[in-house]
Image (cartoon, rainbow, N blue to C red; front, top):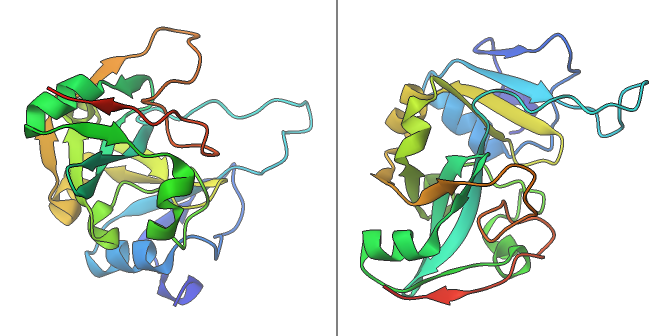
Length: 196
């Protein structure tokens, strides 16, 4: 299903190379079946010839998996923000805890560790989008691999995923160390229980 489902609705950025067949087929199928216009961005895993990484694209969003009661939910928020678990617990009215990547990798068998796309609907999870993302005209998110991202209009995303909305993230201080709200990378995030 992988590469065969990619059609003329996507465009490759000129600074990136070919479509990566490692992108989950369920993601590309969902985008194609919805008629979405999107762009696959591929950043080489090796630094450029002058040892510089490409800067983060505008509109970059991250994801985190949170346990809320007996269920898990997917949170989507801007990359320069972090999740405020107390605020999210108040929003949904129950205790929550951040899940570490090793505890949820089985939920995302076709994704690289720490590269979960913001499509909880494709994995049987409710999706919550922080309202600060609504200011983004086009969002860029992980495409399920460590080197691929997808650029998609925010309104198209909300039409496809039909997420819940709320205020649950706060701007992270510049230069701050990785935090509980950071994307689940390598299972190093701490698991914390927070109540209202």
